Image (cartoon, rainbow, N blue to C red; front, side, top):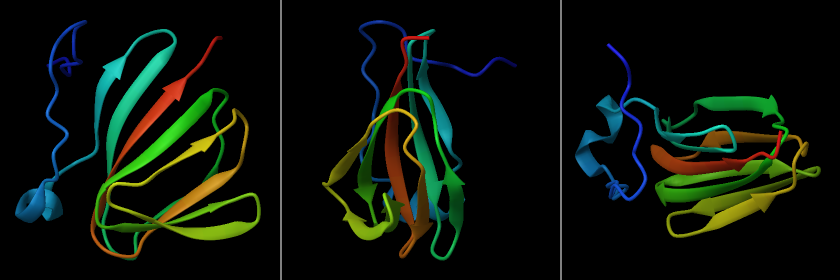
Amino acid sequence: MALHHAASGEIVDIRPLGKKLKEAISVTLVKTPHLQVFRYILLKSNEFAEHKVHGEITVQCLEGVVEFTSQGRKQMLRAGEFVYLAGGDQHALKGMEDASVLVTIVSNK
């Protein structure tokens, strides 16, 4: 079965998952040749190891708290906050609480 990606003009619900967060899975919401948007689930103490992507990205915290590491510094990313990174910047995430983030990647490749 193919995964559903939002069509142009389709409204997508990104509200906090609340009690459903622990059972949720990460999911790609939009995927085109130049844009990818996905909701990433990061439970407490879980890590997304250091990595980089070619395109510019934003990471928006929808719920919980995430330790966001980039450019040699650690910051706490909380619900309602987002961070921007230029393409190729190394970064890592760690769940300080159960959390979900909305990641947007824009690529001109």
